Length: 151
Image (cartoon, rainbow, N blue to C red; front, top):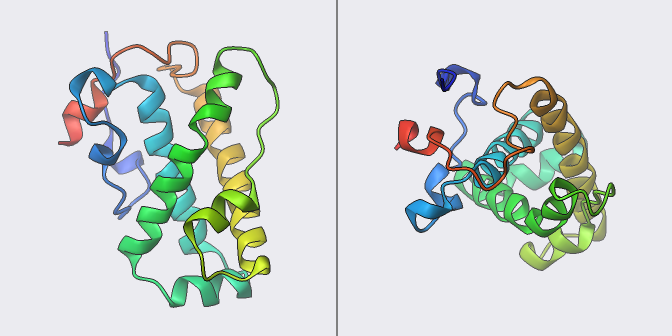
């Protein structure tokens, strides 16, 4: 039996769209859902940050632009996370280079702070995933009905 989806538990007011994580129905997997939730977690982390560098960075962007960056970054982490899910690696690194590839006008400090935020958001997300009964990390290729519930 599938646990009920509580939309209130998805970080509130997150403009990241679940549809950004699949193109075809067969791509609606636990792996894609994991990355969607990570993007929401990263968005929430950036929005709540009191770090002066991030405050300045987000003041120059709309919420949608921040959400698009978070979705990009979460998807950019897919290869790394696939290696972890498959048990081939235990190393997860959120690289400032990933930020730089998307945000061409950032300073080095902004890229570093965003990468640190991405790492912290991922650690928080993994803590939540560890206790979640869905266990997306154990069955990454399984179809995820959660996508159908939020469309």
